[in-house]
Length: 293
Ligand SMILES: NC(=O)c1ccc[n+]([C@@H]2O[C@H](COP(=O)([O-])OP(=O)(O)OC[C@H]3O[C@@H](n4cnc5c(N)ncnc54)[C@H](OP(=O)(O)O)[C@@H]3O)[C@@H](O)[C@H]2O)c1
Image (cartoon, rainbow, N blue to C red; front, side, top):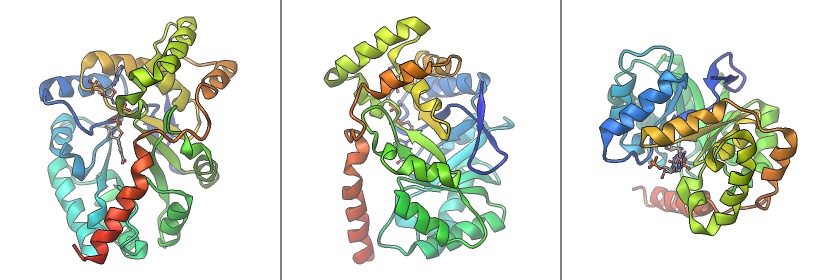
């Protein structure tokens, strides 16, 4: 397994991380699949209070060392006291004393970011969390969040990035590169949509290209992300077969010419992933805050 640095820190994270949103109802198979990834050297595991999977992750990580555990506080908990309480709950669910990476899940335009970041800094200061990250933040939101802090740096931003959701390529990646912030790429398969009929041509081209490397379309999709230096894809696979296939995306290299071929399979401004609904969620959060719900 190859590892890359987290943001500007000395922390080394595996080229691929494990996501735990919407695990299947077969928890034993989920656990086996995740344990398999850990055996193969994956050290990054990502969850969130809103996924309801923190306890499962807690079970999996129990007694294991050298894992890097990331979770997230949901956007309706961004008031100072709520952030602190949410973190305590997550620590309890996960059965650990310290969270490696604590992330703000979605920007909430209804709550002053200064109040939220003050709580995040307090959590680092108190040793409850090690690093601060954000998720679904654009450049401006990222800059505001960083400026709202006095002591610590944002080390990562988790956003959707895949071959049909390429909006991070417009400005965000360049900005994050300059700031040395890791991009945790969620939904590398667009939540499975990339395998649907609509994208048959894309998958067909990837499979053809994959023959040269003895790799599948999915493995090329993951490797294409990994070879972008600040990017670490988060893969979610509920069974061992999918997990093994995805982990095997870490053991080969796509040459520069073929990286260009993959780049050209979809338009650079493609915005067809789940995050195209991002503004709706932001509007909902603002509405809730205005009503003080
Ligand atoms: N921060 C955020 O707002 C946010 C939002 C979404 C996701 N995330 C994170 O990112 C993680 C990954 O995103 P996602 O769950 O949307 O995942 P994804 O990797 O884009 O898609 C998962 C889907 O692809 C299938 N799949 C996995 N490996 C496959 C393979 N080798 N061949 C064919 N199909 C395969 C899975 O099926 P099976 O389950 O049956 O294996 C599942 O249906 C999440 O679990 C979560 O941790 C974060």
